[in-house]
Image 1: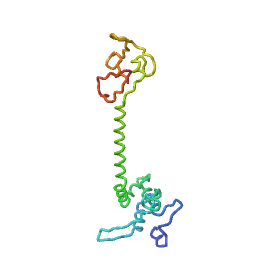
Image 2: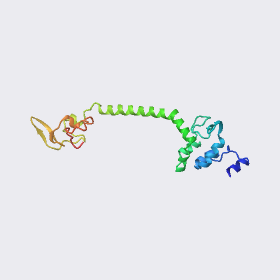
Image 3: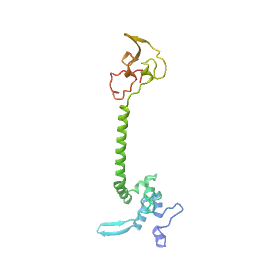
Image 4: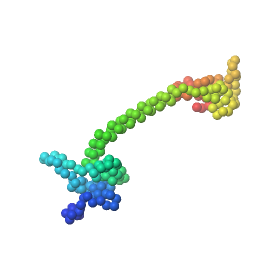
Length: 201
């Protein structure tokens, strides 16, 4: 039926109300046989030698970049296939579209991804290093030497040990006199089992 329509004067450059040509409509509907047939008709043979041949295809309706203004062409065959929601759309990636994706990856996307990934890795390393090695500010608990906790509440437990009067904290290793490191960040020594954690933090 399709070949009969072509013989009767049908044009492959006709667009419907969705601005889809016969090629892009076949891509949207995931009709592989129709897509390959139209693609073969629109291609121009450059040379042929035995079983080897070279064919040029117009990228206006295939590539995702509009050749006139450089913007994204969401109605292109490649865009419709890539964003298709059926398994049949994946079958269209074989052949020309697969070659086109490979060329775009090697020419543009691969380098951009490596640069972006490298920048993110450096940023993440700097961020974690700065956060871990940041200067520790004195909190209310540090200034009052444990008499007022991080919730701005007075120390409710026992106190006094030795010559100095200090709060006694119930830690993971038993009762201990409050010390400065109990209120500090222990990210650098998180795996150290000898560090007492007060108030379960």
